[in-house]
Length: 213
Length: 410
Image (spheres, each protein chain N blue to C red):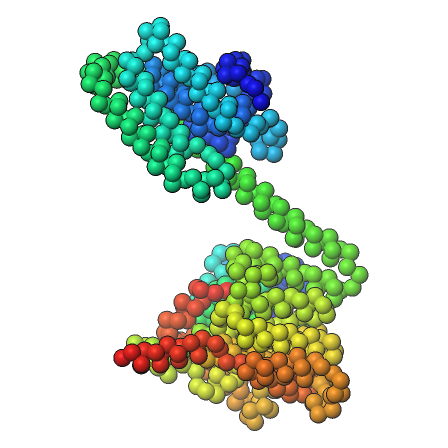
């Protein structure tokens, strides 16, 4: 399989060159941008497979980039990358269509693996994001919600999230729960979908109440 | 200390060169505050003297404006070197006598309202003094009620006397128009100046607050970030530098975002205690501890046991697993708290731990058993280690007690 074509969006030059150097030839970096507007133009021009998107950007943040590009470039996938932001920002980026969220302290191996994973159409959850999901989806489903299916995790999904939060990789989870890795990925994608589509009001309240780190 | 009232008066008139208006202790422009500090008189006493003299015939206002004109502007807090004398009752009495003397002098010269007005204002002023004069804290609590009551009575009596003195009302009435006209004239003349003065005071105050905030922030950054940067430059290995950077990041973040309750020292809730634990383990062993906490709750004795067991497990992982990353996951459920400490290190056979090793048996499993909890160690050589710890939450029992009490009463 060819190396993924990646576009870097981060307002810190140092961070961009760091990621470039660390990922080396595991990816092909087709472009960089430091703010939302030039990111939109650059991504239109280069048509990358994966965009590493900083949550906080001058000119509207990662969310603005996603909202502009998601409808016109459905094949480009976005992986949110952030040093430590308010949960509300991270959640906004996920709900705007990012396929995952990792923190900037992630090791370069894990980052390369995460890029491969989102390129393949799967979701990437850091332990922290899994913890957030468990927290936000805790408690009873409010009776008023339109689609109860979207507003709670299945027991299996909860189990998978808990293991991710405990630091297990998808492979380890699969072995522990006697599932295939594909099934684990399906569960995680389902949780991502719920996270993106749920109308659960706790989600917003939770996010505004807290910061992810 | 024998100090004649007249000497006080002389001192008050023969103003020392170093009288500055006060920046901190002021009602209008800090004249009384500054003079009080220089003379060793409670500024409240001076303020009352000025007030009495102003009411009597306006001379208080003249004195105040003279002070405003001749005293030096306030000193900065940092360069404050003006002599400050402790207020004493003697010197306060001196000022009171001086004021009284001035009143007598004015009465003699015939530039004073009738004696009743003077006496009534003096009584009222004494009342105000009793209520407002500053004393030390212990004294304040002990005498506050008595003093307030006595002072209040005197104020009421004084003001009552002012009004009740039959002729006074007429006298005030005849004078009222003149006073009103003069005030209007003075207002027209001085109005813009007074407005500017007040605005300047506001600006000055805001700037003082801003500069205080700035210096507080500078002090904080100096004590934290700059120190850490210096340490990082001198750190001889990358692991140490990383640990320092991480600790500083955490500390700065908690300071910036204001969740100081969860900061390292407080530990009033589980999050705070765990944050402290993460810092300690990272500093002791050059490892990264990745903490994920779901839910939160206040600390209680059983959770202290859980945190202590998690701490021991994390220390074990850092010491024996040979990894640079440890995952700690803690979930607060409705009726129990679960914690998992996991590493991907070399692992061991739990059946073959030497009997003498107390870490796991005593500090983790035994401790949790004593507190009604449970701990299990899952490990195998080459497979990493996971310690699972859980304990019931205390409030659950309380809830049940309440519920049964409710059932009993209904």
